[in-house]
Structure formats: structure tokens, C-alpha cells
Length: 160
Image (tube, rainbow, N blue to C red):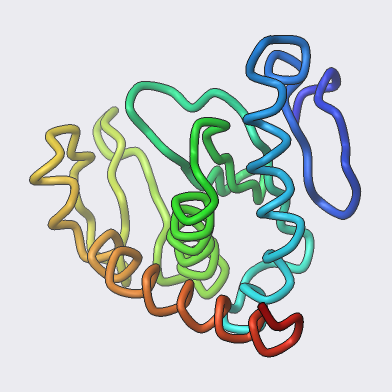
């Protein structure tokens, strides 16, 4: 988190750059989705208790990312409600992978490597290669079903 970020409660933050711009309403919409769904997602995922979520401008074409050293999911302010839920689920799967020790990273011979169950993988920047990494396959495989479970839980709790 940056000191200029606005804390909205719990572990939810919105970047000041979003709040102080014409993108404010978009960022607050994503924050609203996260605020309404984060506890439901935690029912299905083993994530750190002190997990934070930050709504911000993500680098490149990313919609979200998990920053392990800060135990923070960062989501793009540009997402609609369904995308926000699925990207949140995806990144929370990565939080679970790190939390359980299945995923980690290291530097070997000066190069970044992912470690999946202790096996080293080079950092892949081409989308097709990135998508084939086993931790990404797991996150993509689980994001939709976990989102469906959360939507069903919320529908049962609040009705339509």
C-alpha cells in the first residue's frame, strides 16, 4: 500500500491516483464489489488472515496480480462487477498457493524463477506460455467455479 491510498475498511484500499481522477467512480465500483464479496471468497480459499486488496492501475495489460511480499491482491479499476469477482478469485487462488507453500519464487543465476511444489520455472512473458504454467492453470480453472459458489451464497443470503 502507498501512504496516499485511501483505506476503506478491513483490508480494502483504493489508490489515490484513482480517487483523484475521472476514474474515481470506476474504482469505487470495483471496491464495492470487493467489499461485498471478499468474506464469501475467503470461505472457499485458504488465504492469509491479513490479506489486503488494492484497487489501482495495474501494469501493462494485467487485470490483477497478487503481490506476495505485501499479501496484497491488486485489481484494476477498469473491471465490471463480474470481471472483478473472477479476477479477485483468480488472485486469491495465488494468495492461497503462496500461503500453503505450493508457489514461491527465487532468483537463480541472476534470473527470476517461479517455484511450483519446489520445481523451478522460468518467468514467462508471452501470454500462451504464461497461461500454461501450472499455478496459472489452477487459478484459471478455479476462478469461475469459486465465483459461481460465491454468487450462489450471496443470492441465498440476500435474495434477488
